[in-house]
Length: 414
Ligand code: GLV
Ligand code: MN
Ligand code: MN
Image (tube, rainbow, N blue to C red):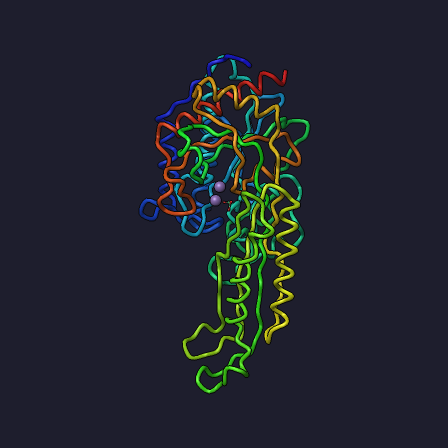
């Protein structure tokens, strides 16, 4: 591996991360769901920062903020996302994008790399306010036709992704596309969002593969009626059907799961959700994740079996996919090598290889471009919560590892 020095500026990195945190700051957390007014404002700020770093920057028709190097030649692409969960942390996604900005600046300041090409992206809607990973899907040309009709899932309004892009002034703006003649590799850095690095005393994780996730909406239709006068035997209570289904999920999923499978019922709603009404409708979101597609298939088959059992009762149950199903994605072995050598150089004996249990844009890019990821520790393993945090030392270290690895990939592409 090249031993070129590409020193990053830790203070500049942290200052930009803290500035980005101000867009949507809510106590120590951040509320900046994709295409909300504050998210759009932050995208314009980010575009300006990319320009100041010497990149040719624009917000494309998919809402992505993309900075292209003005240098000719093959380019590495670094990306992540700056949208947050409805109540999110300040680093999930944001850190990886600001790393890209800082690495672009560091490369342009180092004599050995100043003429090399690095593009940086903030992909829209990784967190799925409308359609998970919409921006990176658009970039690789895989946006399903119905994506623009996807509804806001966070507040129950009928706002579509198409409307939100229109409100942001992006309707009719051309999308940027991956350029196979230009882009040679995709790198993404992220907080781990889990406990393993911290528990094992490691400071860097080199990702081996990214988990696949499937999301389903399960709906139960019964009969709305009076909570006092309707005898129990005559009820078609949608809440009862939903809770029975949920209970069966928790009881039976372990029989079909793999060692690191996880499953979550993160949302439940009742209609009309009133104290003295037998609910006529109920709905939940079922999500499960695993690194192995055959395990995902098994869990999906079991879900359909539980659905059939629900349908044997007095309510009608249906299940349909929600959002993009992310597929498990192994990371590129050659790129992993660059990250591992950079990790060993800057954090000797304090790094490890590990799978990612969270979904990332890298798994969209990975079907089109050699891709790899690195992690830094999450304090107490907390993420998708206001309390999410990482020590400044680890944030700076992770960026330095990424800068060294990026330079080494660029030099190796000669
Ligand atoms: C992405 O944030 C995920 O839910 O894994
Ligand atoms: Mn997230
Ligand atoms: Mn993320």
